[in-house]
Amino acid sequence: MTTQQLIDQIQIKKSFLCVGLDVDLNKIPQHLLELEDPIFEFNKAIIDATHDLTVAYKPNTAFYEAYGIKGWQSLQKTINYINENHPEIFTIADAKRGDIGNTSSMYAKAFFEDLNFDSVTVAPYMGKDSVEPFLAFENKHTILLALTSNEGAFDFQTLNVPEVSGGKELYKQVLETSKNWKNSENLMYVVGATKAEYFTEIRKIVPDSFLLVPGVGAQGGSLQEVCKYGMNANVGLLINSSRAIIYASNGTDFAEKAREEALKMQEEMEGILINH
Figure 1: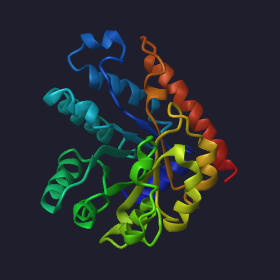
Figure 2: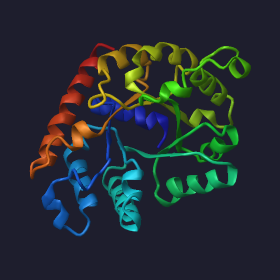
Figure 3: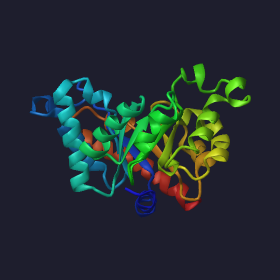
Figure 4: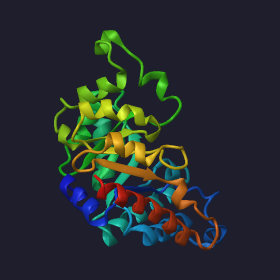
Protein backbone atom coordinates (compact mmCIF):
# COMPACT_ATOMS: atom_id res chain seq x y z
CA MET A 1 0.00 0.00 0.00
CA THR A 2 1.27 3.48 -0.84
CA THR A 3 1.27 6.32 1.65
CA GLN A 4 -1.24 8.18 -0.52
CA GLN A 5 -3.64 5.22 -0.39
CA LEU A 6 -3.44 5.31 3.40
CA ILE A 7 -4.12 9.06 3.39
CA ASP A 8 -7.10 8.48 1.10
CA GLN A 9 -8.57 5.93 3.52
CA ILE A 10 -8.21 8.36 6.41
CA GLN A 11 -10.18 10.93 4.43
CA ILE A 12 -12.83 8.45 3.32
CA LYS A 13 -13.43 6.90 6.74
CA LYS A 14 -12.81 10.08 8.72
CA SER A 15 -10.68 7.94 10.97
CA PHE A 16 -7.03 7.34 11.74
CA LEU A 17 -7.72 4.44 14.09
CA CYS A 18 -5.52 1.36 14.24
CA VAL A 19 -6.94 -1.65 16.06
CA GLY A 20 -4.37 -3.86 17.77
CA LEU A 21 -5.14 -7.57 17.48
CA ASP A 22 -3.30 -8.80 20.57
CA VAL A 23 -5.14 -12.02 21.26
CA ASP A 24 -4.73 -13.71 24.65
CA LEU A 25 -6.62 -16.98 25.04
CA ASN A 26 -7.05 -16.17 28.74
CA LYS A 27 -9.00 -13.03 27.88
CA ILE A 28 -11.17 -13.93 24.91
CA PRO A 29 -14.77 -15.14 25.42
CA GLN A 30 -14.89 -18.68 26.72
CA HIS A 31 -17.34 -19.92 24.09
CA LEU A 32 -14.71 -19.35 21.38
CA LEU A 33 -12.36 -21.85 23.01
CA GLU A 34 -14.60 -24.65 21.78
CA LEU A 35 -13.82 -23.76 18.16
CA GLU A 36 -10.97 -25.22 16.09
CA ASP A 37 -9.12 -21.90 15.81
CA PRO A 38 -10.36 -19.56 18.55
CA ILE A 39 -7.71 -16.91 17.84
CA PHE A 40 -8.72 -16.53 14.22
CA GLU A 41 -12.43 -16.66 15.02
CA PHE A 42 -11.96 -13.89 17.59
CA ASN A 43 -10.01 -11.77 15.10
CA LYS A 44 -12.52 -12.40 12.31
CA ALA A 45 -15.38 -11.22 14.50
CA ILE A 46 -13.47 -8.09 15.56
CA ILE A 47 -12.56 -7.32 11.95
CA ASP A 48 -16.11 -7.86 10.72
CA ALA A 49 -17.39 -5.50 13.42
CA THR A 50 -14.84 -2.69 13.01
CA HIS A 51 -13.46 -2.65 9.46
CA ASP A 52 -15.48 0.41 8.41
CA LEU A 53 -14.22 2.41 11.40
CA THR A 54 -10.50 1.69 11.23
CA VAL A 55 -7.78 2.27 8.66
CA ALA A 56 -5.27 -0.22 10.09
CA TYR A 57 -4.97 -3.50 11.98
CA LYS A 58 -1.89 -4.35 14.02
CA PRO A 59 -1.37 -7.90 15.25
CA ASN A 60 1.43 -8.10 17.81
CA THR A 61 3.24 -11.23 16.68
CA ALA A 62 4.25 -12.25 20.23
CA PHE A 63 0.62 -13.07 20.96
CA TYR A 64 0.69 -15.59 18.10
CA GLU A 65 4.22 -16.94 18.46
CA ALA A 66 3.41 -17.83 22.07
CA TYR A 67 1.11 -20.59 20.80
CA GLY A 68 3.65 -22.16 18.49
CA ILE A 69 2.79 -23.26 14.97
CA LYS A 70 -0.95 -23.04 15.65
CA GLY A 71 -0.58 -19.41 16.65
CA TRP A 72 1.46 -18.63 13.53
CA GLN A 73 -1.23 -20.30 11.41
CA SER A 74 -3.85 -18.13 13.13
CA LEU A 75 -1.79 -15.06 12.26
CA GLN A 76 -1.53 -16.14 8.63
CA LYS A 77 -5.28 -16.77 8.41
CA THR A 78 -5.92 -13.37 9.98
CA ILE A 79 -3.74 -11.40 7.56
CA ASN A 80 -5.13 -13.38 4.62
CA TYR A 81 -8.67 -12.58 5.75
CA ILE A 82 -7.91 -8.85 5.94
CA ASN A 83 -6.11 -8.76 2.59
CA GLU A 84 -8.83 -10.73 0.80
CA ASN A 85 -11.85 -8.96 2.27
CA HIS A 86 -10.55 -5.49 3.13
CA PRO A 87 -7.48 -4.80 0.96
CA GLU A 88 -7.86 -1.07 1.54
CA ILE A 89 -6.88 -1.50 5.20
CA PHE A 90 -3.25 -0.93 6.18
CA THR A 91 -1.71 -3.88 8.00
CA ILE A 92 1.09 -3.73 10.57
CA ALA A 93 3.12 -6.68 11.80
CA ASP A 94 4.10 -5.53 15.26
CA ALA A 95 7.18 -7.73 15.42
CA LYS A 96 9.87 -5.28 16.61
CA ARG A 97 12.53 -7.04 14.58
CA GLY A 98 16.07 -5.79 14.04
CA ASP A 99 19.26 -7.68 13.22
CA ILE A 100 22.21 -7.49 10.84
CA GLY A 101 21.72 -7.48 7.06
CA ASN A 102 21.08 -11.07 6.02
CA THR A 103 18.85 -11.76 9.00
CA SER A 104 16.86 -8.58 8.48
CA SER A 105 16.38 -9.51 4.83
CA MET A 106 14.84 -12.79 5.91
CA TYR A 107 12.60 -11.09 8.47
CA ALA A 108 11.49 -8.68 5.75
CA LYS A 109 10.70 -11.53 3.35
CA ALA A 110 8.70 -13.29 6.05
CA PHE A 111 6.44 -10.34 6.77
CA PHE A 112 6.32 -8.59 3.39
CA GLU A 113 6.35 -11.53 0.97
CA ASP A 114 5.08 -14.61 2.79
CA LEU A 115 2.52 -12.96 5.06
CA ASN A 116 2.00 -9.90 2.83
CA PHE A 117 1.81 -7.27 5.55
CA ASP A 118 2.01 -3.63 4.48
CA SER A 119 4.44 -2.76 7.28
CA VAL A 120 6.50 -4.10 10.15
CA THR A 121 7.84 -2.52 13.34
CA VAL A 122 11.64 -2.54 13.62
CA ALA A 123 14.08 -1.73 16.43
CA PRO A 124 16.84 0.73 15.38
CA TYR A 125 19.50 -0.20 17.93
CA MET A 126 21.76 -2.03 15.45
CA GLY A 127 21.68 0.82 12.96
CA LYS A 128 21.44 1.29 9.22
CA ASP A 129 22.33 -2.18 7.98
CA SER A 130 19.69 -3.71 10.22
CA VAL A 131 16.92 -1.47 8.84
CA GLU A 132 17.69 -0.86 5.17
CA PRO A 133 16.81 -4.44 4.12
CA PHE A 134 13.24 -3.71 5.22
CA LEU A 135 13.23 -0.36 3.39
CA ALA A 136 14.16 -2.02 0.10
CA PHE A 137 10.64 -3.37 -0.45
CA GLU A 138 8.50 -1.19 -2.73
CA ASN A 139 5.23 0.09 -1.25
CA LYS A 140 6.07 -1.54 2.08
CA HIS A 141 6.70 0.48 5.21
CA THR A 142 9.14 0.12 8.08
CA ILE A 143 7.93 1.53 11.37
CA LEU A 144 10.94 2.42 13.47
CA LEU A 145 10.79 2.50 17.26
CA ALA A 146 11.56 6.11 18.13
CA LEU A 147 10.04 7.04 21.49
CA THR A 148 7.99 4.31 23.10
CA SER A 149 5.19 4.54 25.67
CA ASN A 150 6.61 2.19 28.30
CA GLU A 151 8.18 3.27 31.61
CA GLY A 152 11.60 1.97 30.60
CA ALA A 153 11.73 4.32 27.61
CA PHE A 154 13.51 6.79 29.87
CA ASP A 155 16.35 4.33 30.46
CA PHE A 156 17.91 5.16 27.09
CA GLN A 157 15.67 6.96 24.64
CA THR A 158 15.57 10.37 26.30
CA LEU A 159 19.18 10.43 27.52
CA ASN A 160 21.60 13.05 26.24
CA VAL A 161 24.63 11.37 24.70
CA PRO A 162 27.08 14.18 23.85
CA GLU A 163 29.71 11.93 22.30
CA VAL A 164 27.21 10.50 19.84
CA SER A 165 24.58 13.12 19.24
CA GLY A 166 26.07 16.47 20.19
CA GLY A 167 23.94 16.74 23.27
CA LYS A 168 20.66 15.70 21.68
CA GLU A 169 18.42 13.11 23.26
CA LEU A 170 19.04 9.69 21.76
CA TYR A 171 15.56 9.41 20.22
CA LYS A 172 16.20 12.63 18.27
CA GLN A 173 19.43 11.21 16.92
CA VAL A 174 17.58 8.07 15.84
CA LEU A 175 15.05 10.20 13.94
CA GLU A 176 17.67 12.42 12.30
CA THR A 177 20.03 9.60 11.35
CA SER A 178 17.26 7.44 9.90
CA LYS A 179 16.34 10.18 7.43
CA ASN A 180 19.65 9.57 5.66
CA TRP A 181 19.11 5.85 5.10
CA LYS A 182 18.37 4.47 1.65
CA ASN A 183 14.63 4.52 0.84
CA SER A 184 13.92 6.47 4.03
CA GLU A 185 10.68 7.68 2.43
CA ASN A 186 9.33 4.24 3.44
CA LEU A 187 9.89 4.98 7.13
CA MET A 188 7.23 5.58 9.74
CA TYR A 189 7.90 5.91 13.47
CA VAL A 190 6.50 4.61 16.75
CA VAL A 191 5.89 7.43 19.24
CA GLY A 192 4.00 6.66 22.43
CA ALA A 193 0.89 8.67 23.31
CA THR A 194 2.08 8.93 26.90
CA LYS A 195 4.90 11.15 25.60
CA ALA A 196 2.58 13.78 24.08
CA GLU A 197 4.79 16.67 25.18
CA TYR A 198 7.54 15.37 22.86
CA PHE A 199 5.50 15.51 19.66
CA THR A 200 6.36 19.13 18.88
CA GLU A 201 10.08 18.35 18.84
CA ILE A 202 9.52 15.16 16.86
CA ARG A 203 7.56 17.02 14.19
CA LYS A 204 10.45 19.45 13.76
CA ILE A 205 12.61 16.49 12.69
CA VAL A 206 10.09 14.36 10.74
CA PRO A 207 7.31 16.78 9.75
CA ASP A 208 5.84 14.63 6.99
CA SER A 209 6.19 11.07 8.32
CA PHE A 210 3.42 8.93 9.68
CA LEU A 211 3.62 8.20 13.39
CA LEU A 212 2.18 5.02 14.89
CA VAL A 213 0.95 6.03 18.32
CA PRO A 214 0.23 3.38 20.98
CA GLY A 215 -0.83 4.25 24.50
CA VAL A 216 -4.20 5.97 23.97
CA GLY A 217 -6.87 4.41 26.16
CA ALA A 218 -5.73 1.69 28.52
CA GLN A 219 -2.27 3.26 28.98
CA GLY A 220 -3.70 6.71 29.66
CA GLY A 221 -2.58 8.69 26.61
CA SER A 222 -4.75 11.60 25.43
CA LEU A 223 -6.00 11.57 21.84
CA GLN A 224 -6.62 15.32 21.91
CA GLU A 225 -3.09 16.07 23.14
CA VAL A 226 -1.46 13.77 20.60
CA CYS A 227 -3.42 15.38 17.76
CA LYS A 228 -2.74 18.90 18.98
CA TYR A 229 1.02 18.45 18.80
CA GLY A 230 1.48 15.53 16.40
CA MET A 231 -0.93 15.98 13.50
CA ASN A 232 0.39 17.25 10.18
CA ALA A 233 -1.29 18.35 6.92
CA ASN A 234 -2.04 14.73 5.94
CA VAL A 235 -2.98 13.80 9.54
CA GLY A 236 0.19 11.71 9.75
CA LEU A 237 -1.03 9.69 12.72
CA LEU A 238 -2.19 6.14 13.28
CA ILE A 239 -3.65 5.92 16.77
CA ASN A 240 -3.52 2.37 18.06
CA SER A 241 -5.97 0.96 20.55
CA SER A 242 -5.88 -2.70 21.51
CA ARG A 243 -7.31 -3.75 24.87
CA ALA A 244 -9.86 -0.96 25.15
CA ILE A 245 -11.52 -2.16 21.95
CA ILE A 246 -10.99 -5.89 21.58
CA TYR A 247 -11.63 -6.70 25.25
CA ALA A 248 -14.55 -4.32 25.76
CA SER A 249 -16.55 -7.43 26.65
CA ASN A 250 -15.68 -11.07 27.29
CA GLY A 251 -19.21 -12.28 26.60
CA THR A 252 -20.98 -13.35 23.45
CA ASP A 253 -21.48 -9.66 22.63
CA PHE A 254 -17.71 -9.03 22.44
CA ALA A 255 -17.73 -7.98 18.78
CA GLU A 256 -20.68 -5.65 19.26
CA LYS A 257 -19.00 -4.00 22.26
CA ALA A 258 -15.73 -3.74 20.35
CA ARG A 259 -17.57 -1.88 17.61
CA GLU A 260 -19.09 0.49 20.16
CA GLU A 261 -15.65 1.38 21.51
CA ALA A 262 -14.15 1.74 18.02
CA LEU A 263 -17.07 3.97 17.02
CA LYS A 264 -16.44 6.24 20.00
CA MET A 265 -12.85 6.72 18.89
CA GLN A 266 -13.79 7.18 15.24
CA GLU A 267 -16.36 9.84 16.14
CA GLU A 268 -13.83 11.69 18.27
CA MET A 269 -11.34 11.51 15.39
CA GLU A 270 -13.94 12.79 12.95
CA GLY A 271 -14.52 15.79 15.19
CA ILE A 272 -10.80 16.47 15.30
CA LEU A 273 -10.52 16.20 11.51
CA ILE A 274 -13.40 18.65 10.99
CA ASN A 275 -11.50 21.25 13.00
CA HIS A 276 -8.09 20.39 11.55
